[in-house]
Image 1 (cartoon, one colour):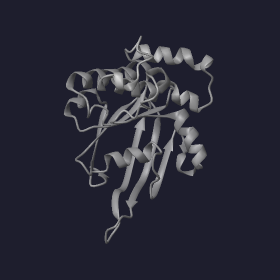
Image 2 (cartoon, helix red, strand yellow):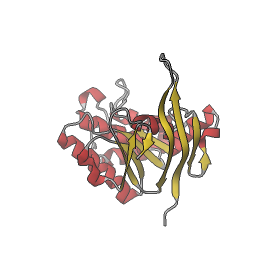
Image 3 (cartoon, helix red, strand yellow):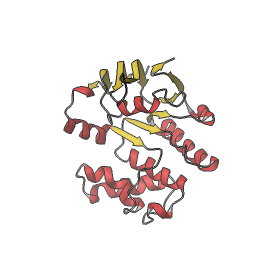
Image 4 (cartoon, helix red, strand yellow):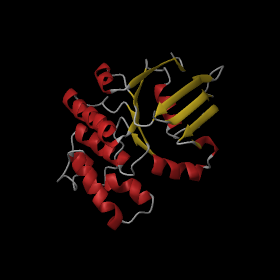
Amino acid sequence: MKENILEVKNLVKTYKINSPSPVRALRGVDFFCKEGEFVGLMGRSGSGKSTFLHQLALLDIPTLGSIKITGVDVLKLTQGQKAVFRLKTLGYIFQDYALIPELNLYENIALPMMALGISKSRYHKDVVEIINRVGLGGRENNLPSELSGGEQQRVSIARAIINKPKILFADEPTANLDSESAFVVMELMRELVDKHGQTIIMVTHEEDDEKYLDRIVHLKDGKIK
């Protein structure tokens, strides 16, 4: 039986905004994910899906609770330690691709390795291999503006997996894509799970995505149903 790669206990996120009372986006969530599992987070807008994903990916700090990733109590890490942990252990796919427009396809993908101080002589082979894996061989010098939405999202996936992360987080990766591009992206993500043992936690609204998932977790009003 595969081990839990991520464990969450009593996760609470409260936002203090200009209102009579704080907004509780997460209300004591318990959650786990096993290694090599493709988990979908689903629920209506405002249910807490993206907020939850941000806490798991260390992009935000919860109000209460604990998060363990590969056995590490990540909320006890310093900001600097969290930054290194994210680069080495986690990957993130954004809904809007979040590519740097001035950098070409190759440079966007290589960015996480560059951030770790890895030399081009060491990362070049990996970058070329990933580019071919996502079906964009020969497009290395293209800028994001010269790519379709589906191609940009494949670049985003390549960038997210270049450091071989233990967990890949995806926030509605097909929301801005047409049906054909969405199909290509979801097939690619399923292939990452089946052929490379990648663990993926994905927020989605799309019913068509359900057939690719191993398990679906429904959130409602900041809690798991």
